[in-house]
Length: 286
Image (cartoon, rainbow, N blue to C red):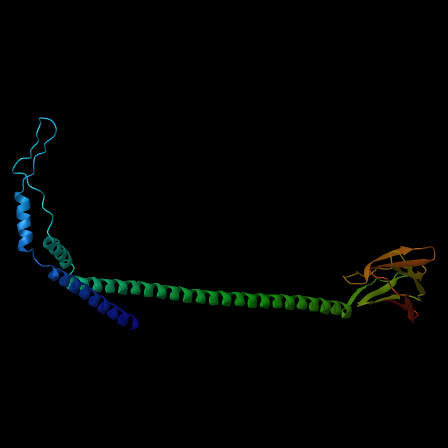
């Protein structure tokens, strides 16, 4: 609204200036008076005047032809008329047309400027939207990464817990293997053996067809438990299953004893031998 009012005021001012200029030129032309009769007579005399011949020192005489006349100076009236005609070219209608064209041109420029401003505003809004979308995406990715890290941490903790539980289960789990032989009349026979792996504790039970005496001791580097049974005995050792204490069991003989050796995975404490009854003996170590 303010721009339209400014354009209207500018057009009115330019119209007033144009009309004033036209009025000034018209007043100047009317003040120029026509030539007087004296001026006319002078011009007529000048036209009929004859140029006197030049008489040089010699016999040669130069004379201008009788019909040659002097060039007349332009009249002031003609100059004024010419100026007036030139001024008539710029009429008030043309001035108004020029102002209207200028106003339309400015309107077009204003429209273009407004369109550019709208485009810039749209670009700015799009940039803000893209920035917000990018920010949301980054925050989402960070949240996802944090969640993934938390999940990994939880998974690692769960694995650790499972391993600890497994170790505890292995510790609490009791593994029992048994074996035995039928007795013979001409040989001492261990008719029953039982290996019990109870976590960190190992129990080995033997039962013979007659009275048994046994003893035990430790050997180091590597750690071993030796179980000696007095006399020569027929025996079948039980199978050693996977555990955390015993690698394997080996059977050997000395001059006076039947020897059983426990090869261990850990350093054991001092073993104990319990006489349960005359025919049963139990070896215990940790």
